[in-house]
Image 1 (cartoon, helix red, strand yellow):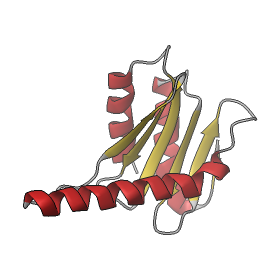
Image 2 (cartoon, helix red, strand yellow):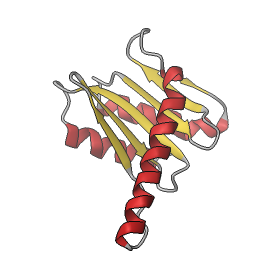
Image 3 (spheres, one colour):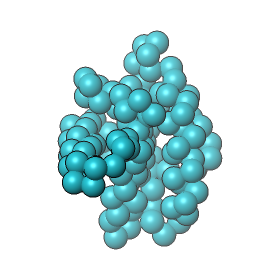
Image 4 (cartoon, one colour):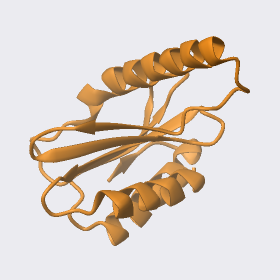
Length: 131
């Protein structure tokens, strides 16, 4: 598990929690959305490279936030914040969970055949609260 200095301590704690609860975790990272900096990373295999994902994760979150804002404008409803983004692949699920203030994102990749999505979402929500 890689991490930077003091600001990364909560990020490292969040990833340790996820790894303890989801031993089949393939990849996890905590990203500061304002700077694009990875605060902590975990990869089950050397081939998985979290650093390559930082910019695309931030872009997905920004696009989802813009989409949500456009929907709210059309519906004239009170503002709701984006909480998570789920990307499904044939063999993997990628979940991006935002910290409550939207400043950091927790990314995790899990196997779609050996992990319960509802459980992964619940664990990601708790891990994001540790940030």
